[in-house]
Length: 110
Image (cartoon, rainbow, N blue to C red; front, side, top):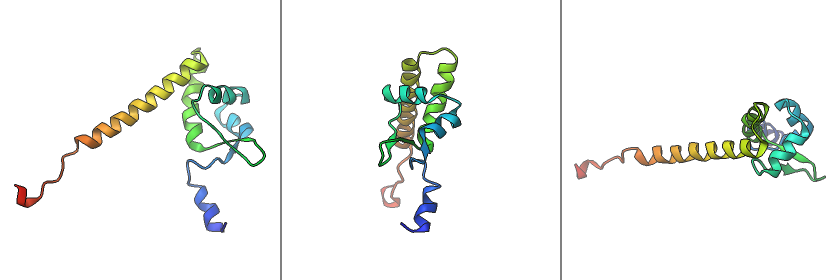
């Protein structure tokens, strides 16, 4: 791997750069919270060669609103389901918007 490859990873939202301890610290959560949202299948951390959980920035962005819901008293399973459904809705809306875009017409068809 070259230095350029390493630097590209800095911009990769999916690169599992954060250890469980660092991820928990960044979220202001416990490691148990991260294990629980993994058990609820909200996020699936990648594993290092030694078997340790590693988290990406994308996964931490998914975990943050779940933590907020749990802090407000929502059970963790319900919080994970809410976040997953919101993510699915956002994706469906994006797909629908793509399908609603007008198809460019060929000048000969006009």
